[in-house]
Length: 137
Image (cartoon, rainbow, N blue to C red; front, side):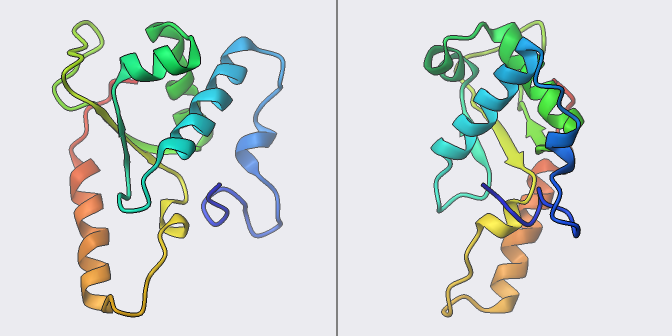
């Protein structure tokens, strides 16, 4: 789990404090969040997966996943979502949805052979990728 982006200076997790742990939507949101962290590749900064795959793996409907991702964005566990050419009405299963979880910077390790300049360039590429993302969730 990304520690730096999720835990504040007082060692509290504000996103979890916002949860009441009483709703099905919160449970689904936690399932989706843990699944996204589980499938994340170390080589990629963002997570790219099709909506149908999330639905199949977690046995949730697409509407439940959409609601869960919206909730994750609202409480700050997911920073950005890029749906590409997909829309709420027309979800084309040929295209994956890209997720950028909060604290993604702390999930990335910086090996000695990567210069600061190339590291900054890679970070800038991530910001550019999600800069113009449409609000689907």
